[in-house]
Image (cartoon, rainbow over all chains, first blue to last red; front, top):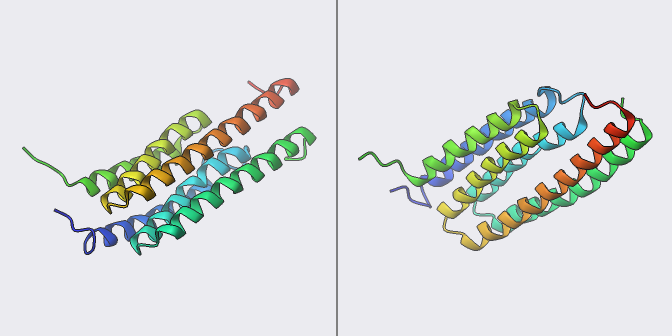
Length: 92
Length: 86
């Protein structure tokens, strides 16, 4: 049985760092990410999940909830900006 | 019978969701694979026995996926009206 105070924070911390690195490389160099900005925005979910795992490994639960809700507000604003730029044909 | 521990199942779920979500190219497939990633996050929080935090974070990711799908449909409508789709 894995104990929640000794072994589980290590697993969660290193998995969070791995997701952060993989997700950052995917946001920058991912397939079709430079042509469509909404694909880049969807790829940004992976490093946010890595950051949430690192925070939960330190038992910072309120910090994790705050970063997830701020992520949702960021989605609202950026989706509005992408739609406006797509209407103005100013993306490319 | 071989049993794997519950956090290792969450780790496998998160790795599969992250790599699959990054390498797909259609946006619907990406959203589905990132839902697998979010399920891994929820089960990892539940392994810490923070069940209230798991409930609140599942609601947050749900709202984010709905907003992304609304923006995706709006973008596809604009592209189709301009004649760039297909």
